[in-house]
Amino acid sequence: MASPLLAVPLEIRRHIYGFCIPQKLTFDCSDDMYYQNRPVGWIEPLRHINESYDRYTSDDENFLDGVEYLHSEWKGKGKLSPLEEIEEICTEDSLVEKDGSDGSSMEDDLGLCGLESLQFPPSSSHMSSLPALLLLCRQINEEVEIMLYEGNTFTVDIHCQSQYYLERQFTKRNRERMRNIILVIRPIGVPYEPDSLMDPDIWDTVLGNLISLGVIIEQPEPPLLEWLEDSEKETTGNFLTFLRDRKREAVGQWMTWLLPIFEYLVRAVPKQTEIVVDVTEEEDTVQTLEFFQKGPFRFQRLPAADAISNKVEFAWESGSRESFYRDVVDEGPASCKDVINDSDYDYYYSD
Image (cartoon, rainbow, N blue to C red; front, side):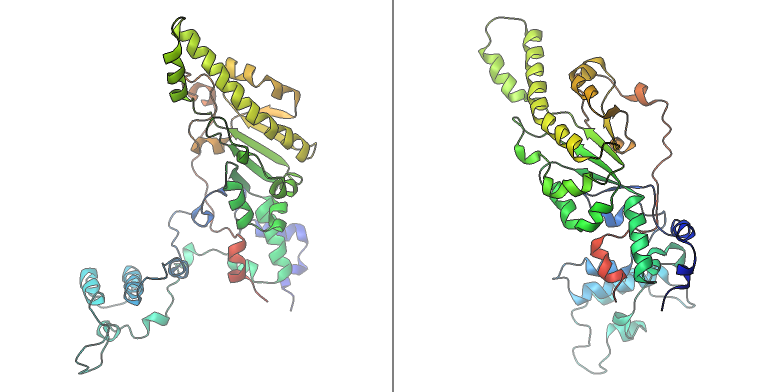
């Protein structure tokens, strides 16, 4: 039976969905997304807590956690035993009296028979409407998922294995639905390894559908140990000249690694896609990145870069970025009630 909501025009349905799902938020795909952008006061469902238990966790420990949760949510009359007493009872050697005299368990002692079969949902004020929305019907589920991936920004660290974590976390179909991506380019090691480059098998379909692409470029770490070895070989010359030459060499190595990435991005994204690069405003940096001016790039601060330290600043002795960003107002972290990824699909929706 079709949901009555489908009788409403799609434009209005999408407006309604917007009140129930996260929109215009940024999620870090290189980290656990389950806990990101949760509202103040959000309570993790006991179901998810239990699913995250180590498989060797004992029944006693699971029961203790359940009792502690019930204790924290207790609103009935009467007085519940102090939490310390509950923990003492729960950590006894056996749930049943060893002498078997009355066969009572600690559930009976606490008046909580059958507790192991109970679920402790979070307060209704903190519950998300997203799972229920996804359960209405398959068409609504499809429409909501499209809005989820089109209406949020996803940050991906492309160094080493992080891009493969993106591949495992989202199906190909949902990666194709993404419209706003921020890439974090993180050079590590000198010379920089080729496995830091982007895998076309993962990125071709993602980049081909983007509306906006942000790139946060992190500064390469100067190879100080190598410079120290070189300095021991120097018998003449000025130290500042030596240091300046080594910096120039390091930037050259870094550019050799960086250029193929941007050449690939220009080929892979649609011509109308805007590529925003986050770099500093300092003159030497802009001169070093001068070749970018020939491509479809715009240099601008990306708010997502605030959480990433040590971004690209080729002048390692450069000062604070505060003066460059003083006109930007930080409104604090955004929040949402829920976000679904592919691992949640089977739980939220099934035929």
